[in-house]
Amino acid sequence: GSHRRLGRPARGRNAGGGGKVERARALQATGEMQEALDRLREAAGSDDDELSARAVFVGEVVKCHMGAPFEESERRISERLDTLEQAGAGASALAEGYLA
Image (tube, rainbow, N blue to C red; front, side):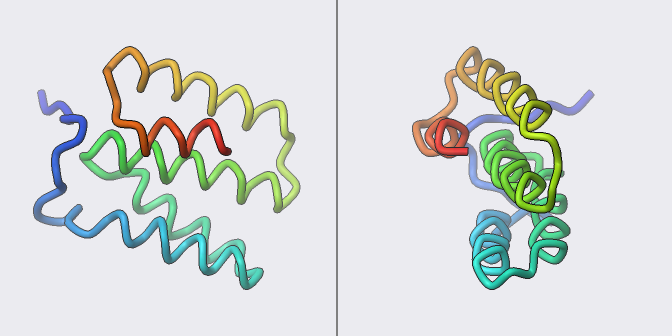
């Protein structure tokens, strides 16, 4: 099966995926929550674990702003952080999770 590699630049359909996270942040800042969430869902499907995790973390924050229960988002973030820490993820992905 295929597996993801931490810290490796995305290639092919996932190249430039980090820009999706940043664009989603900009959409969130302008109140376009659903559009932000849609972009984050795309990035969350990346083959790059760290990019995917960043998108999930930001997406959970957006969901909370849209009325999702905080406790569920907190649990999903904590679980993802545990997985990243065990895999030796980079500082930026971990920081994104802790800031979420």
